[in-house]
Amino acid sequence: MLITGKEILDIAQKNKFAIPAFNAGSGQLFTAVMETAEEMKAPFMMAIHPDELSFLKDSFIGQVLYECNHTKIPVCLHLDHGANIKQVMHAIKLGFTSVMIDASHKPFEENIRITKEIVNIAHLAGVSVEAELGTIGDTGNTVEGGVTEIIYTDPLKAQEFIAETGIDSLAIAIGTAHGIYPKNFVPKLRLDILKETTKLVDIPLVLHGGSSNSDTEIASAVELGIAKINISSDIKICFAQKLRELLNSGNSEIREPNVLFPACMLETKKVAKQKIELFKTNDKAGLYYL
Image 1 (cartoon, one colour):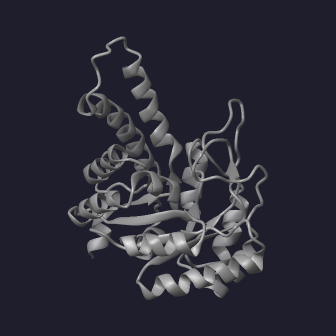
Image 2 (image 1 turned 30 degrees about the vertical axis):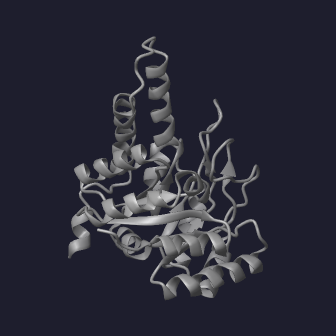
């Protein structure tokens, strides 16, 4: 069941759970997270970054839309970190039901102007819009990007930004980073910023860079009002590790995709299941049929 970002996140916000947004940048990753969500009766967002879409080609979206329209699980197809109006318009034309415009690196007023323009276009097409305020850190080589120094979201600015733009959800910066954190580095979320922000705004809040943060902090963030959490590195690293193991096993005859990939997909499914349970999304699909 394909639905919009607003539809999937409003119910999550109301019922105190978070939607996992899986950056599943291949058919194997998408199948793994879809099967896991179906098994766990969990709504989720299929997130695709413009760089991933460029690699996968537009035809891949046909596969995704087919699966989304033939499952009973609520699914939203989301453009992650759209950088400009061209990328956003392209995603809308392909059938995405949610788009993110990331102008967070621009000055505040410029971020508002760009985001408002996207909202006006997307809402006419019935597509939801996510924006970002503050900056997400970057731990290394990730498609999502980020910055070395995190600029935390100002709750008062968040309130103003939402009122000016009319967005449907807001990604806030409270200390996360895209990618996996360096060894011996222990990240700490600014949950005080999250608490203050939820007092001032009424739309769903989003956490980017959710991989590698402690389960305790993530669970607290969900309790405090985070309604969507992006997961990319965690589901890809376990897939890649298993693939390396198989390729380095000494059996040079292992080459068929249907032999190589199932074990890798199983590892991804284990991680997806853990995230769904952590976000309290399991068995929530029924809430969307009421």
